[in-house]
Image 1 (cartoon, rainbow, N blue to C red):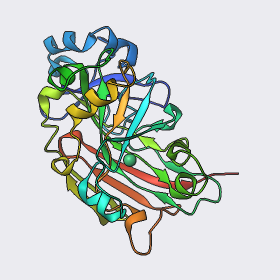
Image 2 (image 1 turned 45 degrees about the vertical axis):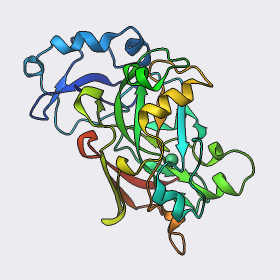
Image 3 (image 1 turned 180 degrees about the vertical axis):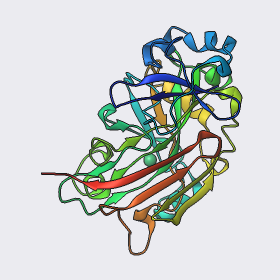
Image 4 (image 1 turned 90 degrees about the horizontal axis):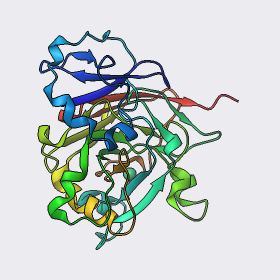
Length: 281
Ligand code: ZN
């Protein structure tokens, strides 16, 4: 299944793709695709639904973040071999984990707003895992049973705040709009998580092109690993790291400017486009 949320920000309704990729309204069946609803196991009941019998969603509808009420947003650093190389850093022997504020989450095509005086905004296409149930200390053998699905993410980063302002990376990763997620929440049966193509371009120029095959720690391992030191809750989102081609890795670095357009393609996970805007003071 491919689920989504459509409508104005904060007022989204549930939706489901039909087999031809058409957007269908699920709001007569499910109140919302929320963290709480995922925790009640609601996903399984949707399998009996024939999307072709649902109303069509207008083509120009805004798509929102595919899960409402996310409680934890966890991210993985340096999880692609070629990205670690461009950063000039050794291949990690254990996953590097950091946290983004949940308030950064936004729809896949919403504007990305740079903070005041920002000159080091950067892009990071990633696959996100959405957790389906309370997950604590699970082995790799059962980890995937705890996953509700996968989604496409842009782990937008402000490198000066991330790297030059002392302390943890979260500072440069948590501004409002720095977590575009979606369009779809794709259930694990529809996707091969270890073989997802990822491309990102800025103003039509290709910057990142890779595949989850180049991941150092795969999605199953990451769920198991993270659950060994913290409890994961239904709806929690794990951004699994970005491949090579970020602005920071260019010589000299290339950063986002207001007016830029980012376009992300995650194959079966769908596409995102974001316009970069400046903070209005
Ligand atoms: Zn990242």
